[in-house]
Length: 358
Ligand code: NDP
Ligand code: MG
Image: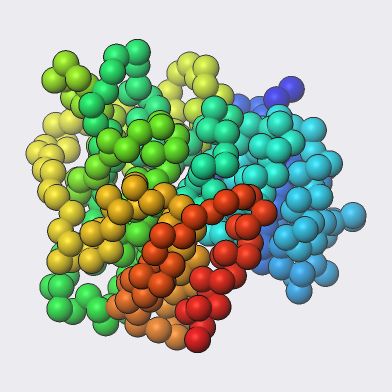
């Protein structure tokens, strides 16, 4: 019987992954959460995993499981115990990076939602062992054939503030930013969509996964088209599917799917589709797209600054504008940064965060 491990089982992707595992009759050998012990306990009861870890040490007594692994070290320990050849990493932000590295070191395949792993450590990860869960990269994977491509396109919804006046955006409140027009996702990625950092991350993610710099992004407000590939012969193909992460998750768990996962799109109901460029006036961070492609190690800096500022924004400690101002500040300070080895990651991540604290 196929079995998997799910890191971040209590999150938006994690919950959908468990649904797909149930649908396919896949055993869940291990699960990992951070602080939602109510849901974690329900998952333990329902899926009877052999191993469980909780990252947040303060919550350990609320978890109904003997021999629980605890803390970020506990997640690594859990991975060492699990026999499953496939790990779904649906943890959020930097917390997912070390577990991804460890999975690959252990010779396991990685079904990757935690795009931050590639943004931070892409050059050290063996992408032949990674199945993308991110919808755009799943779309690219789905479209990719033998023919030579000239450009990869991923689409953006524009996030929750896409119809706002630019002048008002800097003061957007947490409640405004979390009101995503199309997708229901975790809080951090919803903020990342509004700042367009999510698309910068995804450009780097595509770079590592498909080994190319020929990547661009467009706004498609209905989020019906997830990715397009322009081929050298002048054809462009598009991946069209409903706004539902179950499809990419299903393929990351089992690439020989037969039968329906989602209802097909009713094209007549969709009506028209429109593509727009990503305006730097509205999304000021988008200006660094080409810079990041040329200096991909700067992904670590972008991610460290973003993780910290999004957390502060969600805690209502800083304004929306502070997210991109501080990212700019960190990028300027660490310009030219080179990541020499995997063992430097932790230190460099802390250095960026400490810089922003001062
Ligand atoms: P959620 O916030 O919904 O879930 C995050 C999960 O990670 C939860 O299980 C949470 O635990 C856990 N977690 C949080 N902090 C830690 C930590 N320090 N250590 C261990 N586990 C932790 O996020 P999403 O599911 O939306 O996103 C997960 C990843 O997938 C992100 O990298 C995101 O960018 C990516 N992604 C998400 C998409 C989506 O549709 N949601 C689409 C494409 C990519 P708990 O809830 O118990 O606190
Ligand atoms: Mg995406």
